[in-house]
Structures are given as C-alpha cells and as structure tokens.
Amino acid sequence: ALSYPQVTPSSGKTSDTFSYSVYFADQDGDSPSTKDVVIDGVAHAMTLTSGSTSNGWYGFDTSLAAGSHAYYFSFRDIRGGSARAPLAGTLSGPDVYAFFLASLSPSSATAGGPGFVLSVTGTDFVDGAVVRWDGSDRTTTFVDSTRVTAAIGAGDLTAGKAVAITVRNPD
Image (spheres, helix red, strand yellow):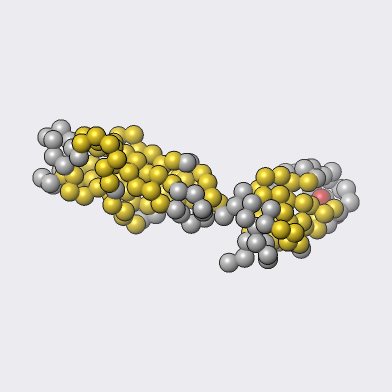
C-alpha cells in the first residue's frame, strides 16, 4: 500500500528542487520491483530514503519547467502486486514559476483615471521581458533582473475591476 503521497514545496521557481515522496508498506514483506513517481506522464524511478525496502519512505528530487504539474505514484512488488496513489487520476502540483513578482507600484489605480507607468519588482527578469495587463502585452522597459516598467494607458482603466498582472520572459 502507498500512503502520504506528497511533493514539497507546493510551488516554487524553475531553479528550485522539488521532492516527491511516498510511504510504501507491503503486507507480505516484499520489496518493490518497480517504484515510480509519474510526473506529467513520465515515470521516474524512486529511491529508498528511510526505513526498509518493504516498509519505508521513497523519494525522488527534480527541477521542473514553469507551469502546473500533475503526478501519481506507481509501485509493483516482486509477486506482481501493485499499488497506486492516488488510486485513480493524478495529484496536482507543484506550480512552478520562472520568477516571482514581489511588488507593484502603484499598487492600485482609479477607474477612469489617467495612464501611468507601472513598476514591477520581482526576480529573474531578463532583457525582453514583457508586462501583461489583463492578458495583453504592454510596452515594457527592462530596468534590471529585479525590475521592469510598463506603460499603462488610460484606456486600460475604463472598467472598475481587478486585473491580472504578469511578466513574461522571452522564450
């Protein structure tokens, strides 16, 4: 049986290491012949991190590309018995980002107000990064790896609503 399936951290950057772990216990005392975590459809062999081979924790460490990920664990013992966690489907996580946005300045604007220059502070920006306002690219100036600025026009402030602000590094 497999229990306590997890990945830590639950979110992070592409430069982070993500640790997948699960507890395996075989009632017959059999060691697993196959011990995989399947991440985004690709199987990765796990190794024993503590306990015995028939009753212990297994882990796999990796870095991941930006985006949302899905995983499950699949084990088979030497007699052909199998265990899966979850029993069906996948578990979600982690969410991986190329960088993090730390702050916006100004942090708010008034509907119907004038345009302004938005300063976005974060990490790992590169020359050519583009600020996206409510899903659309805005003219962006790369200042350095921690800051970009973007021109936000008065037309962007016509509707009084919260908007998503993201930064996209070039491919």
